[in-house]
Amino acid sequence: MVRTYTDAQGLPFISEIDSWLVWREKTKGFTDLESFPAARTNAAYCPLCQKDRIVTDEKYGRMYCLCFMLQYQQKIGLKLNKYRTPFDLFEVVPIEKMDDRNQPDMIEAISAFKHFVNTLDSWLLVSGPRGTGKTNLLMSTAIKLGPMALYLSADDFEHRLFYALETGNVVRFMNDIKRAPVLLFDDWGTEYGQSSSGSSFVNAKFRAIINWRYAYWREFPTAVTTNWNPAQVLEQDARVGSRLRDDRRSKLLVINISDYRDKKNRRNHASNS
Image 1 (cartoon, rainbow, N blue to C red):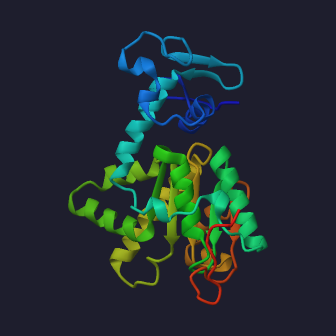
Image 2: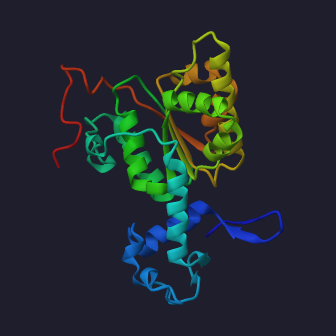
Image 3: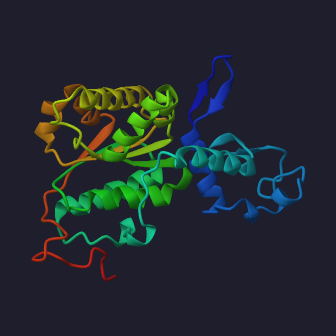
């Protein structure tokens, strides 16, 4: 059932995430407005729902017209583009083709991310050493979720935060990251261990983002990877760690396998199937 919320004027509105899930189910993956004939002719009715602006669905309830929903997604995507960490799409192995190496940890992680992509109904914290496929899991998730997902590395977060500080845009930057429909934060913890006021500033801002999203966790799905082990997560930052490890809202995935990039263990990252 779709979650409804109330705005400052007391009017109900639909969750952004639920809106996107409905659009994905009904359109079966349309990503281009040109897929909708009426978008080029300013027709009065949506070509999919045949209604003016809204569609009523028995399963999900009253929703905005699918065409308007797509336009809304595109606006979100454009806003988040300036914050996304770039990566080579052709180097990313799709979740369903990742080599699990017959390891229970990786099998569980792949299954959890498939569920995350399909439902967006929980948070994920992925712990494990470098080279175990954590980044690929986030990148492949970002590709599948499209404009609703913000993939951001810890290094890029630090760089963009200080740029926002220099240009007087910290408040806007923080609000945009906080409110990204889906946040995929890679390599949390790389900024720790640096005894500088700058590092403390970065840590405080990341903590503020997680605290804010945690309060609205259903509306703002989040996945975070880290090289720390589960005990270190709480030792390094108890406030953030306690939220990311809250098993009522978040699933902890611990991947203890050898480095994919190690010559002794190198196999095709994708399965042969």
